[in-house]
Amino acid sequence: MSDTTIDTAELGEKIVNVLKSIYDPEIPVDIYELGLIYDVFVNEDYDVKILMTLTTPNCPVAETLPLEVEEKVKSLNAVKSAEVEITFDPPWTQELMSEEAKLELGML
Image (cartoon, rainbow, N blue to C red; front, side, top):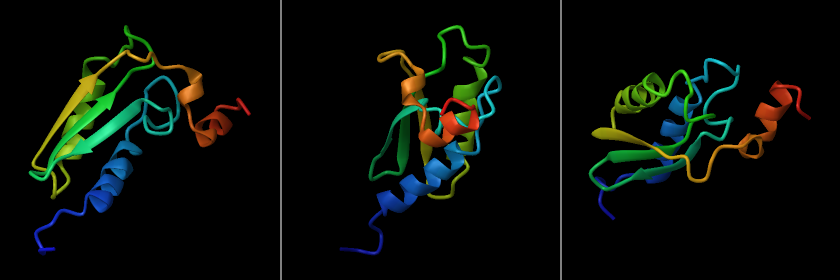
């Protein structure tokens, strides 16, 4: 294994930390704990693709939130490019929230 091999687990962790710094403006919980991030893909060229959803299709931040995610992930040194794809399949439900998020919102 060469030194140039990308440690995707380590990069994945860094990406998750970035995602945890982005908050849904209507709910005081970060988008990762809310369960808005469905998947994060990293290829050997350090291109990142994030599959995410929004709490509702007419979410007030539908335009700005994906851009914020892209910009913040792109700011990581190891990342060459970042692309966010929004999906509503499956639609977001409160079931996707982490225990931490539910606790934060008094749902447990």
